Image 1 (tube, rainbow, N blue to C red):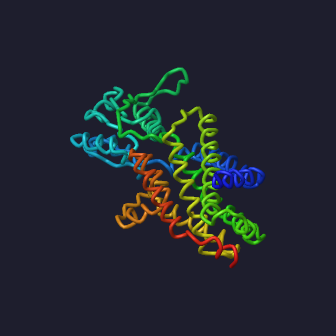
Image 2: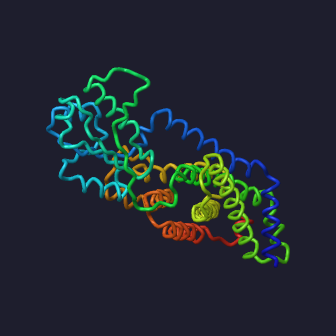
Image 3: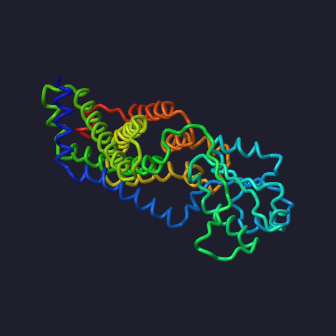
Length: 355
């Protein structure tokens, strides 16, 4: 009963500190809106995954089209079409565009060639490329500009891929989790301020046991972070018109648990406030660097060592779900990560309060 009362008291203390709570909701929402707008304005070129082009690479018009499309293409011969489709199903590429074997012949005969786009969603990350292909074909066929004529030549086919529970939530989950870890420095400062103001010493003078006090501090911190981070995700989904997924909220809660463990670990490791924000910022920076391959697929980072190291980043497990991985395995991995921080950061409250 003492643990429950202490936890409620700590939650009330957090709720009376809007400078701790409000940024957890509004800052991630602003970041999500800003990044989404930036990606849309830049046509998503930086975040766009590789697109496979299946064609006769030696064809007259095919060669010209390949030169115009640039380097963000993986080329396959007509006979290797199924290999390209398998890559799409495994989420290694965002879409497959197939030019028929008579592409050049059809254009020479002033006939619209058959072009098929295979993707896993209506966007599929290939809209800009499809538009460029349409323009190339129109120019090659010498179509006259007429706003009343639909010159869209490409036929789209949506195929089934490995399921991903995150879907379009990946940006929201990533931004909210990133801010969770960034904010861990603020909660470290809050915990250290309790020590500095002798609040912890006064709590030790009561009948409450050390374990009850430290558990209530950790549990209340976890509940506050999990609740308001989940609320931020729900608001982001409402704004974007996306469905609210319980497993996705559990993924946010798992990241909240890791963040709580990180707070305890840092407070145990550094008892001086000057090191807190430097440490949390460094942790966020390293975690993002380790996941650059997933965050920016266009970088094409294929180092096996780098991929192994990225597993120690909490962001890795978010992108693992986004790429079709099992969300519950990712949640379990995050819980283990949080337990490691808790174990490394466990301390005797008396020593922490008095030193």
